[in-house]
Structure formats: C-alpha cells, structure tokens
Image 1 (cartoon, rainbow, N blue to C red):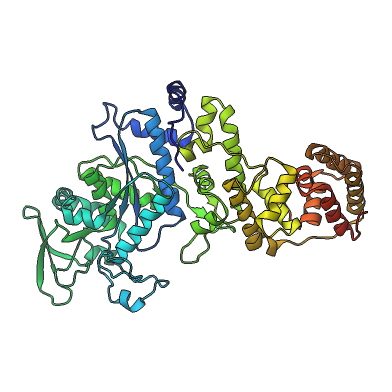
Image 2: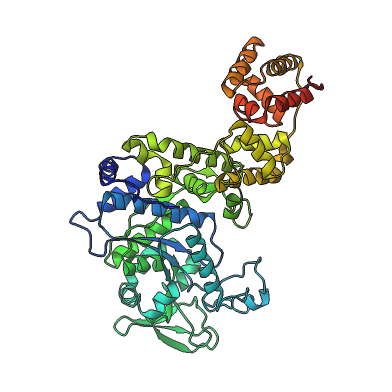
Length: 537
C-alpha cells in the first residue's frame, strides 16, 4: 500500500520537502511537532513510533486506523528529516491476565480454567499455537503484513522476561510513593485500599494477581504480599517477569524503557495519556508526542461498541473496497467524529480515486495536501476507473446484472478501452459492486410511480432519447437539465430526485447523462417506459 518516494527525482523530492515545512496537512503538523522534540539534534538511534495492541481479541478496523495514521506521520517525518532513522513498534500487551472469557471463542471450559493467567500462558482454544496470546499475536502480524506496514513486533511477555524492562521496573519501585500519589486520586475508596502498581505473578499458579502489597524493598528490588490461597507471605523480585504493572503505569514504563517518541490514542484515553505522562516524568523521561483521535460512530450517530456489534468490520469494508480506500477514510479529519458504516464505503472509494486522478497535475503544495499522497507515503499508483463505483451500483440495480461479464459488457459499450478480463482492478470493482448491491442495496430499493408532471417530463425524455440514439453523456445531461427547466421543477434538484426515486428506487443517484449513456439508449428508454407503465417503440 505504501509506495514511497522512489519514483521521484531528487529535485521533485526536494520541492516536496521544501513545501512540507509549511504544509497544513495534519501528518506534517504532527511530524514538525515531533522534530521540535529534539532542538539540539536527533539521537543516533533516530525516533521511535509505537502502536499498542491488546491480544485478548482479534485485530480490527481500529487497529488498522491507528497503524495507518501513525505510519502517515512517520512518512511525513522522514520526508522532512532525511537520513534520520525511524522505527515503528507494534507492541502486544500479551502478559495481561485474562480476566474474562470472550463468549464467541470455542473451548469455553478450557479458557475458564485459565482465568487470570497471562495471555501467553492461556491455552489456544483454536489449537494452532502454543497459547491464546501467541495465536492472536500471529493474527496481528499477518494482519499488518497483509497491508504492507513496516513495523517491529514486540511482546510484553518477552520484554518482561528477557530483562528489557528491568531497569525501568526498578525505577518504578524506587518512585513508588510518587506514582501512588498520581494514581490514588483517580480511584474509588475501595480500590484505593488495595491498589498497587505491581501485579505479582504467582510462583505457585502462574496467575497475574491483583493483591495489596504488604512490603516493598527498593534496595533489594522486591515486593511482598499475602498469597490469596494460603495466606502465607510471598516475596518476589519486580524484575525478570515476576511482576506485571497495572496498565497505566505499564504504559508509562514502556514509553521510558523503549524510548518511545510518538504514540497516538483514541479520545477515550485522554485521561489515561495524562496520567501515564505524569508517571513517565516521575521516571525521569519525557512522554511521547502524539494526539488523540476521535472515535467512530454508527449510522445512527451512536458510539461503536464491540459488545453491541454496531460497527463496521474491516472484513466488511475489504469485501467491497480496496484497503487504500479505508486508509483514505482514516486520513480524513482524524480529530472529528465520523460515522463508520457500510454506506460510507462507495463514497470513500470514489473520492480516493478522484484524488489519485488529480495528483499528477497538482503543485507540490497541493500534492502534500492530497490524501492519496499520505495513503501511499508518496505518489499514488496511477489508476482511474472508467466510471465511479456509485454509478456501477446504479447500473447493477437497473440492469439486474449478476455476473461481471454482463456488467463488463455495459462498460465496454460505454468506454471501449475497458478490458475487465485483463484489468484485475476493474474486475475487482465490478465484482464488489455486484456483491454490495446484492448484500445492502437491493433490499432497500423501492421505486415510486410518477405524478402527472413527472409523467409528462419523463415521456418527453424518453422521446428525445429515441430521436437521439447516439447522443453522448454530455448531450444527454444537457437535455435532462432542459426538460427539468421546461417543466418548472423548483428547485431543479427536485427533478433529479424524482429521476432517482422513480427510475432507481433511491433518494440518491448518479449523473444521469453518464448513467443513460452507460446503460444504453434502448435500455434507458425501456427503463423509463416501465416506470410510465408503457413500452417505448
């Protein structure tokens, strides 16, 4: 998906770089903010981006959005700061204890017996990996790889057990009281009485325990607690994977231990970012840059909930549209709440291709503001479908086309250069239009009968089409306008709304001149004749 700048000349890249210093596109604004973090020069290791993932569930459309947006900022930073190394860490919180069993998973008794174990110690209910955490980590990596994201995968379990976090964990223990002073005011009275940043892993059961501490020794690097089963006092080191941190403290510890420079998060985590940032400063580090993106809404404007299942899955989007269109949707106004449902897919796909088509003729300033540049991290691969996807949907609706060959035949008559058989992208669009119509459009279509004025106007349009069988899209569009004006439709868009509702069974529709030219004069006359209750001669 990310093509980069390799196809550009050095002069073209420099022109873009010069313009990027002023560009108002949000990835460049974020990249400049990140660069300002190091006014005295960047560290030798460069800058590190991070996205986090909880492997108790499968990757989803939000996972894609966060990685895609972070990658857009990364590519913008690289354009502005040539030669500075960058890394993107995809971090899995796979040492978290499994507190509840997702109801949709198989082998429920097996999972219930593993409650409170780290996810990398929970048996894989699918039987394909050594643990449930490993199974979902593999799904995450396959998911990211399928889109061509460039990243470094890190496992929380590996980082804790390898000692990678040890030095920072000891800092947490050393600054225990200061961290508690940050955390306790955010908790209820009951939780305050038992809260500790450290979650010991039981030597006896392997479970991640949520127990109050009875003692701590910063010099020895240990904590003590009463075993919840036996009541006996247990002392364990905070290092070497013997403890796991509560997640807000864990987030700050990870930023410090890994040297994270940039991480974005959803609006629902604003308070958590604030708390973790305070803890990072207590640990002697500067919290990462980043911004909080808005969450998605469903078709009715309600917050999307995995429990309610009112959201759009990435599988649903990719059934009908290429991943570039989804990345395009993610690029647009990340700080504004947007509805995410199937109805936005055709529009997003058509707008993506419009921006791709516009790119070659744009100035450097316009190119950097073009979403397609950020979708691909450089010039988008040139491709212009012969007709918009929305128009393909209308064609499917009125033609009854149920296979790509039938729909392809209409396209070739309208645009003879079309070769669906040898153009896999066009073939994919045609197949997607047929599937989308069958799944989501056909059940909603309801054509209405014309009133007296609409009947007369449609009859005149049918007669004109019969007299001009070779008219092109522009000529037809002009006549459609003229008929609407002659019959005094006010406003004129009410005439087009009537055409959509009467001929297509929808309140929205295509440019009618293009539609009639694509569908063919004879077919269009038959469509109008059917609506009028007569068969044109």
